[in-house]
Image (cartoon, rainbow, N blue to C red):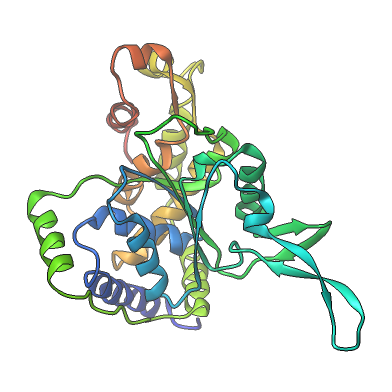
Length: 329
């Protein structure tokens, strides 16, 4: 993308309007969720989507993939799922000349957009294979490394209601997700619109607007967005204040937080804020961009104490108090 910064801003803001218009053909409401997914995609990160079943998470992810003309793959994680089921495996094949050789058959992880449905229902060994793909953008099979297509974007869902038969994601894997996007029930008016649409006619077809190359160019443009030092310092202070036991830690953090966020949270806030700024039609980051992304950035990186849980203090309340406490630039 060789455009000037102002042209890049106009291009991405126009792209956002087109994307929202296309997604509105199949998705009703969920504006914050859509924004966070787009920010994550432009920032080149993965998303963990937490919410009850039946809220069209699969439809949303597939629709985003269609808008960007990206290859979509859905993996249903189950207790008996093995690494080869997602990575792929080698099979013995006989060629036309009569010789036999091992050929690698790619698994469903070889796509641009992966919906990892109920990722916490699969054993740690399979989770580890997914972790390598997310972190390294490559997989290993029979000692050979295979590079995954770019862009590579994982959207993993987990059901917060049914915990029986699940394998909680380790903190190391949770930290690999750029955001934890919380999806909730629709307001009555939006739910009525969904019911009327889905019971009266076939949904409209989403038209692809961009290519994989466009996405990679957008991601490069995001990294070139400037950020003022005070705003970057504010993002770092937000992250550092989540860590208990420090001299400057407020009392509520020492009481309610057992484990704080690491440096990757600061990086996420800054990079995500750059993407949000471009999507909002600005060539610079504002404090509001940092604040808007604080909840999805920290809700899976901050571990509440037993005292917080006993007192009924939620992670959302802790983050709200954090935003109120840390001085803004």
